[in-house]
Length: 278
Image (cartoon, rainbow, N blue to C red; front, side, top):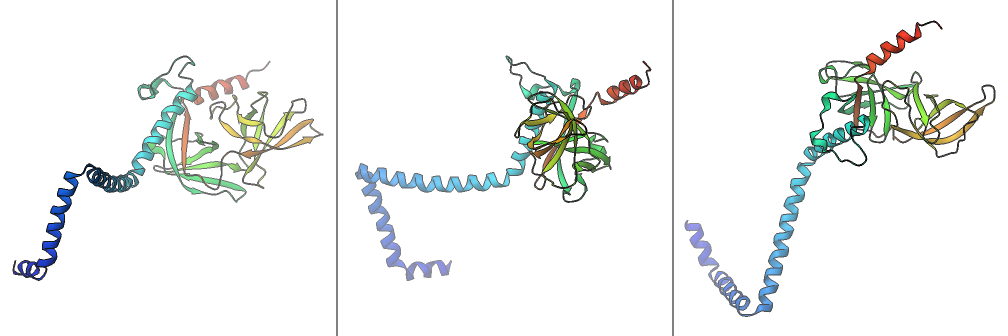
């Protein structure tokens, strides 16, 4: 207390000056509309800057929460898209979507390990058996397909990347609906190959490649890439196409795991048909 009193006595002239200055400014602002408007504009500018800074700080710490909200909304939208649970003339609230009767269900996951420079590449995800993940589920990103679940543990799963020499997926040309086999020759991590496209099919560089209807893992029409180069295999009278992937395989973090709930039934039916002799 004594220190406060000593401080006041030491600076009494300065404190008196500041006190009188505040009183003079108050009378000036009250008596002149111009000064009054300037004062309030300055006060609003200062308070606005403080609020903006505070809001930016708050937004930064809430980024993870907002990102999770976006991921969940993307899941609902993809459920609508892959299950055709809408009509062109009707809008359905995705929050009310009943996922129990859908053919495809989707789980969001994150990549914790990704290889792309080997001959046979694999990806590790942070979701496993306890999250409902099983072998032969498809994995995609917002830009296109990524691979297929090969093995799972309780908390993690291993994906056979599309950049794997064992990878063989059904894919089609968007413009013609003709399909072939999508493979990888192990050379360029940005490019895969689409083979067995008949010679009679009209093609051009830049045509879009999508997942085909014959796949029991992926829904039809998921983007894959675009034609980069066209080669004709004369011995087979078919094309071999280099496909530029839409995904940047070196920079992927968030993915979606797709479960076709009808896959087992479809495979059992196909197995029975394969044993029939005609």
